[in-house]
Image 1 (tube, rainbow, N blue to C red):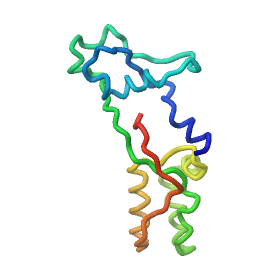
Image 2 (cartoon, rainbow, N blue to C red):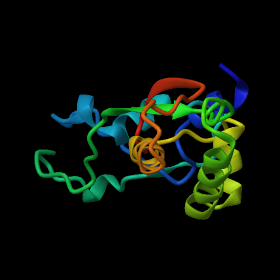
Image 3 (cartoon, rainbow, N blue to C red):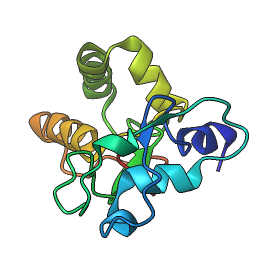
Length: 145
């Protein structure tokens, strides 16, 4: 795994963390996971105001489910088995949809492709009559910050 992927696994800078250890939902809360992943290397963080956390924690408006999503990394070989004409057109459509910057961030594995992004690419392939599934460079399971 390259360094860029490791950087993407860190908690986003502005993501609010929760330090309520007594919350009954703490083990399933992404905000609590973010708090546990925070190290001394991070000088400044955002936190959920402890005065705004419900006493029971059951109906906490700040709760976010700590589930991982299956993401793809890299599109450097995405068009290898696609006819040139179709490949050129698919690349143009990807840049039109995602923008040039994001397209190349996917290409360089600086950002993952979410399941929705993968599905969009799959639909492009199907519209071109390409029956094989898109091939991404690798896959991981990541938190959906």
